[in-house]
Length: 231
Ligand code: BEZ
Image (cartoon, rainbow, N blue to C red; front, side, top):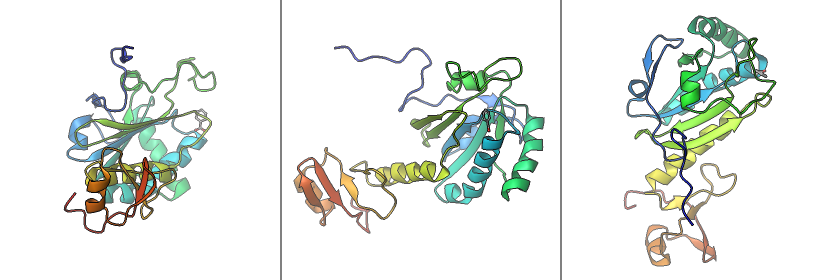
């Protein structure tokens, strides 16, 4: 069987996140310059001055210090212009008690939205007053080598969960730190046991993770070692 290939331009996990230059609430931005050596969360919302989006942007802004601690930069996007973004940010801060300081990209021509496939097939509840699609609630986690590591897509009617986005960052960064020799189980949060990757033999596992236990040959759990310098 041949492996199905993405169509030209389709972004998948492992794809390189395309670079772009755009206007934003903080002026012109070149995406790769903004990311620098950091991780990045690029996320879109349907429309400024709307209720769910206001709660979401306020929540991301309030959690920004936790992302910063982990070397993660935030950047929003919608099809509104940058004057609209700047005016709306004042409302977001007033309503949610945030101090939103990350940029929100202005993409009225939907150039970046199309590049990143942030437009749905057609949700009739998510269109502007001219009937043109708005962006959906997309989240891209991008690593410092510009590889896409997570894609989430939520419908307009459902606000996202910032704790989940942070949890995925913790999972990805923990796995990286452990040389990708561990994965994380359902509902994992930092402090919980992790799974030893199938590529690690029992022999190697007993050296790297002396406290590991085997539930089945394919399911081996371990606390994270305090010192990971030998991994
Ligand atoms: C909202 O943020 O509440 C929203 C925006 C666009 C469509 C539906 C809901």
